[in-house]
Image 1 (spheres, rainbow, N blue to C red):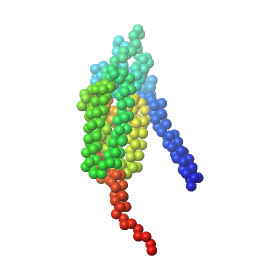
Image 2 (cartoon, one colour):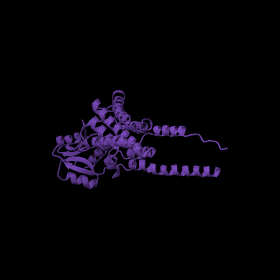
Image 3 (cartoon, one colour):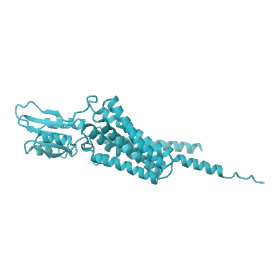
Image 4 (tube, rainbow, N blue to C red):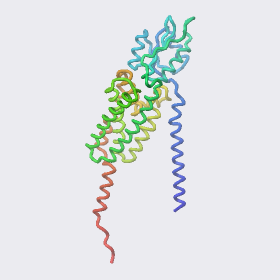
Length: 332
């Protein structure tokens, strides 16, 4: 018996180390390999400018040619591109949107300084931040860090709704209520208390609430369909994998592909993109994230409606059956 317990202990240790070996590259590899991959940008200037950028960084940029700086800025504010590189008679300019991604803004500034098209005597590259970060979060670190607690609590909310509520109507009500309250509360903390997210309060609350609702409903739905295994599957895909490839702290186009694109179809990636759209771009580029999170929310509710009862009801039923069973009659 003791030998079996020791063997089981060793197997548990080996299994945990194996999972650890998989999680380390899942988180560290994307962060260690950040570089532009078909990053959408706009260019305006000599006809050869786009070709020069492509030759200098093959595969780095998905370039859209625009006639002037005004068109470039409009494309940035609509979230069609992350920034723009312009070459004028006065010299090169780079228009960035640090509110869209501080990392991309830095990369574009560096790319512009390497342009061979600077006229003689030019005073260097002019950098214009079209959509700047909030003054209380100058590096954008607070924006990215605030998503982790909301993801954790949404995961927990989905599990608790399945665990503690037996009636399907109660589960649906709880999930919708959680999304509303989580959005209003998280927006209040981030805007009114910490001041790290700009934009209209209700728009930001709506973005955060839709993310929280979609995440919680998806986990509750998987739990209703698969039981405790569904919670584990949701935690693995939506939280561990989804957080690693979300691109919230940088940009999905900077991650190894196709993982950057896949991350935008998971709740954390879609939620991060939606919050940036609501906070910094007046809703520009919000269409896909809204569709993704709505699909998770509605899909989760449908699974809740057709899924099994919670663990609490199963335990109560088991206790009731045991109590109802007649006591064995002693022999003799």
